[in-house]
Image (cartoon, rainbow, N blue to C red; front, side, top):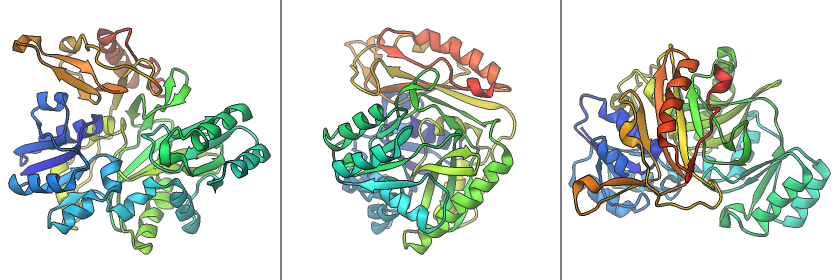
Length: 425
């Protein structure tokens, strides 16, 4: 088999690495991929993730058996629709189905219609009306940009001053461009957060092992929201019974609701959830694998990943099995200043010293080459640079091993949280 992975981040690196484990997969292409993926045997091609015509031409010319779309932007621009129109197999939701991530207002309206538990909320396009509502409700409160903002368009405000500033930045200062012309203001929910992803094909739902992401930039869950600073799986403090409730009251209802709305979903449905006193509730839906959750969940998959996706693409029942023992932990190395202003182009030293037992998933890296091959070096090229991941029998063992490796990457231009996975020790 030949498989094409669209995207070039840590999530896509993890997807490609898992595909390469399958015996029947001969070649994995990534468009555009990244230099770290190339070091793992992935063939990177210089095509933008949103250039559907060129992606389709490449898939045809290289006899690609199927394509997996990693990021949200190409999904919402209809790349899966384009592949299907061209008679090619692509795994991911159509543009209509991906709206469950593309618009928080749509997702909220959808959840209300199909009685899916979530925070109460109201949507605004007028700043004065939004501000009046904010003043009425008080803090703590949550403000979200309606559209895509790379995981950063959410402000969890503990004071009315924080909330007002966030609202102003989104609606008046256009902090997230068109994405924050419309905002959703919702109640602040209390509880333990976790990520529940599932392979979905129409009304059929096949859940994955749950994970917990660390969204805030700094230790102790302080600082601004990011795309994710680390993750681990499983999450022992979330009871199995609560996960089963979430599957039935959230994922299954969502899959059936999307079919009823003529937006049948095939792909990865991600539910960012919170375990409240009233049961699990939805914080957000995504229409693709989470990042960095994928980097710790896919290594737990015991089934043949290529077979699984192929079965779903052919409307067959897939074999979905995850490890029940041990833990997987992943820690993100980020550029100083992320998720706000940061500089790139700094050499990532210490990569050659990382233990062979540790997996390195590249995200925001670039390979710079000098006049001789030995002058090649990885430099930072994004906010989240890479993620180190390991498997161990216990969280304590995983944390001890992984943080020893993280020290090898210490650099004044980079930072990482030192409390990832601590809750699960």
